[in-house]
Image 1: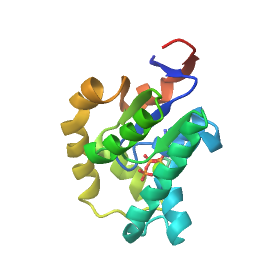
Image 2: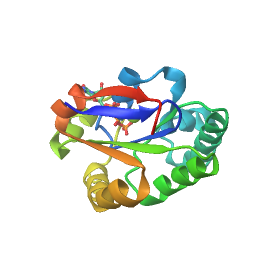
Image 3: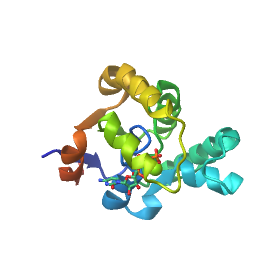
Image 4: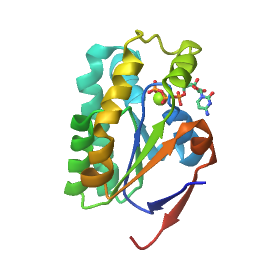
Length: 173
Ligand code: CTP
Ligand code: MG
């Protein structure tokens, strides 16, 4: 069982393809107000969580909320795919500006699981190529994510490991 050790205050970045269970995981382990979701931000600026034309505005809003919360000393969890290095870098830069630690939690599920879950969702209508592409992007970034990018990175492999993980908070890092 993986015990995810987090600082009481800092940035937590969830990483995983669509359907990997990030929002589910966030709901289970964190308070609603601690979680900043790119989908929620997209809905707030576009009335539609799937409006891709709103991505730039949605992430500007997400970054603003993350920066504000970190500056105010609040633990902040980013619920977005974060499979690409560019978006992760922007979040890491904000954490650095605010002088707080960054932890990644990677939810790595088999492609078949993500695809089957997404197919059953009323809120998602993803083209077939999206999940495989996101998985390739994730694979490519896994090593630097665990090495250079984050102070700590937890990689949870498969549904059982994800479901069994627990979160504890540590004062000293
Ligand atoms: N789900 C599930 N069992 C889990 C985790 C998720 O049945 N252990 C279901 C959720 O109820 C949801 C779907 O799988 O209907 C996708 O999970 P979600 O947490 O929404 O995935 P995300 O990674 O947040 O996907 P996205 O990036 O598209 O927001
Ligand atoms: Mg989600």
